[in-house]
Image (tube, rainbow over all chains, first blue to last red):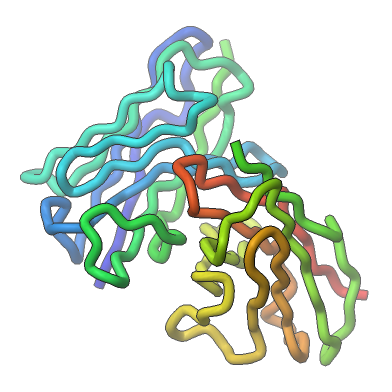
Length: 126
Length: 107
């Protein structure tokens, strides 16, 4: 059974760096074709994809946020970490991590996200 | 970047109604499209992938169609559990852009 769970600070100050951790179970982050992404949702607004990391450490980013994001994984800890620099109140959102399926055994699949964490609300305020 | 535009933003419907939501892409995405259902305070749930393929466990009253730039999600006979917000998402490129959402509310 695949599960994901986000953790991190509930409150960060403007200009600080936000670090979020996604702890996964039910699959290995090093298995061929595995990928995990981060998606956020400001209160009352739409979903926005942020970043994706593949089993082989290939990283992909939303072009509009690329300069502020870093995604990494620690396979031994079953964790995917997202770092966002220089946060602003507009970054206030619920942050989700999610698993992407590999339906066709590709090395680098792109798909919808089939398993999601419960989300963690991060507020950026001084 | 690919833009995804959903319409309508809100649809008011009654139990048993047929509901159709449209999603338009700013350029062709072939069939690389997913649909999600999201309820308040919950994570999105994947309903449809590859534009028309039903995710495992999703009721058959949900269906998706379309290719290229125009897509639809249809709920054949609206049930109480279906009142939620629905999002489309393209995955042709590493923009992985979501639509702005369509809220299905009780009429």
